[in-house]
Each structure stands twice: as structure tokens, then as C-alpha cells.
Length: 504
Image 1 (cartoon, rainbow, N blue to C red):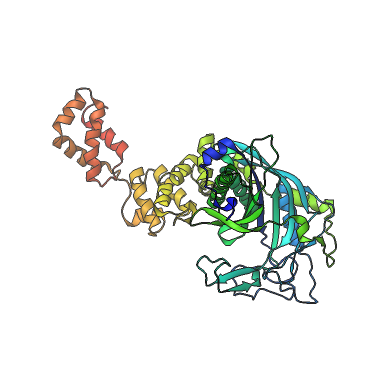
Image 2 (cartoon, one colour):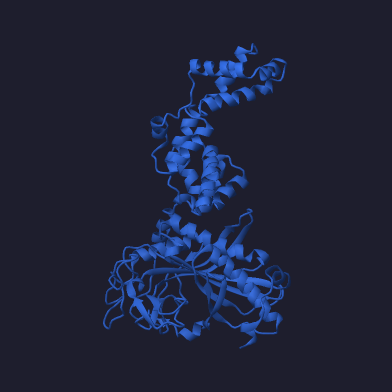
């Protein structure tokens, strides 16, 4: 076996000290159109295998493609959101290669004439640092079908006894976004890669061009990594890890490839330009096939499709109709809510931005919304190993809970009890408080009786208070709260104690 395959891994920090990593990322996003890119087959997820197809999807002889206008519009939306220039004319090409999921033996894509080019996007890291990623191109193409390899231990073709092909995905519209080399990331390379893909995912959702669910493969990243001696050296040979579909896996892919490539270079070996596969169980990558260069695909213009020439008027209409993009929205909300930069970053990193915004829209203050989602609810999510938005509570219910506190109907301690019951499916906060008698006790006759009993039971505490240690009142309030199951109005209890002891 070659040195390239047997070299030991180098510690990540050690590799970063001695080599300069350069990234390149290709992101594929499936567009949420009603039909496929070049035919009228429905663009749906999880249909029975080979039912969402037409002769064009299957590449049958005599079938001809027709471009999906909505897919072109979505591609232009993406290009504009990424600060790209939009081509006045572009065309499709045939990318030639044989694989069972492409019955035509070619993929209809774009090569030297993409719909969008020369763009950029600013990526914010967890500590607020901004990294600008330059976009080389964003082009339209069709997805391939899905192969399922059966009989092996890994689900991959190696060791499988046979394979099954589902052509439902064949022809689904894709936009592929290709970066220029991303230098100067050093030890933050894994974080930059994941943050970039997360930024694109958020943009796709804001544009409403895709559900952008990575677990469904709506968004997939091909992660290119190369190493060089220092920033002044030529780019090293890259590897391309294909179809990485989670942010954590993207980070792990970059870390592993940097360590693996550093080990090969330290041992005097050479990096092989190849595609690789990421293994979720081990966090490692393995070799796929030698990576082809563009000329190996024998691109030539698609003869069955005319060039796409979006008018400038149409492009400007699309630009004017773009929604507020995530970065601009975050800046606006930061100003409206009065959060510190750190508070805002914490909310964003926790995936709570939409939840806090919806809770504020339902009537809560921004600070109280942040308190609940970043406090008790975040703790619950961690305990359940779940995302915040998967919890069994809505922003409207959180706002209702806070309203009960603001109105003095419950206190914070009771609110936490009510929250637990809401999460358990007991109903809305107000209904729970009503049905279970959890409202704060503010009846003076009830509270006065409880205060009298506490004073009678604690003469030593009373003496301290009357001797000038007013803070000792807490020792009386505690038993009163216990006798009322935590439902006494603590503020009113304090007032009554002061009155009884002649300290008002």
C-alpha cells in the first residue's frame, strides 16, 4: 500500500502550525419547484420508488427536455443574494460520465456559461469574526437518481451483493455554488467551512427556494481541502470529500483531512487528487476515485436546449422582490431588541433566533423571550438531546407564560412548574394555572394569617429584624412561601411583615 494510504495522522494543532490549509466548497441545493428541471415529473420527496418519473427523467430515446422557468428564477434569486453578476445569456452543457443513476450517460449541467458568477458572501463565526468567501459561480443542473447498495456492511458499493436504483430524484433542479479558494483560515478552517454552509442554508430558506433540510439531502457539500507550506506557496493538491450533509460532519471532514494530509506530506508522500467519502461513525474519510478534471467529462453544449437569456427587466424585478436576507435581519433585530453582541450571537448559535422573534411577535419582551429560550428551554433541549424548535412548546405559549408573570398572576417559581406541564402536553399556560389552582395567592386575609403564624413560630428572627437586621425578613418569607406551596405574593408578604413589626 502506498505511503499516501498508510501515513500516520498528525495532531490537528501541530498540522496547523506547519501547514497552511486552503478550502474550496461546492454546495448543491435542491430547488423546491413543483416539477423537475427539464420535464413535468413532480418534484416530491419520499414517493414510492420510480413513480415520480417521465420518459425524460428516465432518459428514454426520443424524449426532449424543456427548461423549468421557476428553477431559472430561483437560480437568479440565489445568485443575487450571493452578490453575483447574472449572465445576460448562458447555456446548458452535457457532462459525460456513466453511472447507473444517470440513464442518459450524461448530466445536463452548465460548464463555461453559468447563470451567475463573481459573487461573495460574508460569513460570521461564533465569536463575531467576519470571513468573506468569494463565489466563483452558481450554475443550474439536474440531480441524479439514488443508488441503494444492498448486502454489504457499510451501505456502500464495496461489499454489496447488488444495487437498486430509484430515479425519482433524477432531474430534480439543482443549483451548485462553487467558491474560489478560501485561504487564511488556519486553525479555524473547520469552523469556517461549517459556518459558510450554514450561511448558505439560511439564505436558501430566507429566499424560499428550498426547504434546505440537510438530513434529506436538500443541501449537500463537497468539501475540498489542500495544504501548502505557507501562504506564499502555490496551492497544494486537493481532495474532494463528497456529499457531506451536516455541519458537524463538515467540521470533522476538514479536521481529518488536514491531519491526514499533513501525515502524508511529513512522510514524504504525495497527495492524490481524488474524491473521498466521510464516515460518520469514525469521523474519517476514505478514498473514492481519482478526481477527474473538467476536460475528462468532455463537456459540450446541450443541443436540445436553447440558451437561457434572462432579460435585465426580469432580473431587476427579481432583485426588487428579494426578502430581507439573514445578515440584514440579524442587524435589524439586534437594534430593535437591544441585545449585546454576545447575547445575539448566543441566540443565533443556539438556533433560537426564529423562536425569539416569534415569541416577541406574540407579545413578550425581547429579554424575557431570550430568558426562556436560552434558559429553561435550552436546558430541557440539552437533556432531551433535541433541537430547540423540536420541543413541545410554541412561541405563543412562551409569550402567554411570560404574560402571566408580568401580570402578577404567577411568579417565576410557579412559571417553571407551568412550563414543565406545557412541555408534557398538559395544555396552554393560562389553562394549566386555572385548572390546577396555581395562581399567586394575593388575598390579604390569607397572607396575614400566614404572616402571623410565621412571626409566632420565629421569635428569634423577629428580634433580629426589630434590632435592625431587616434582611432577616427572608427567614420569615421562606416558611410562608412553603405553607402556600410557593404561591404567595412575596412582595405583598414582605409589606405585611413590615407593617406587623412596625417597620413600614
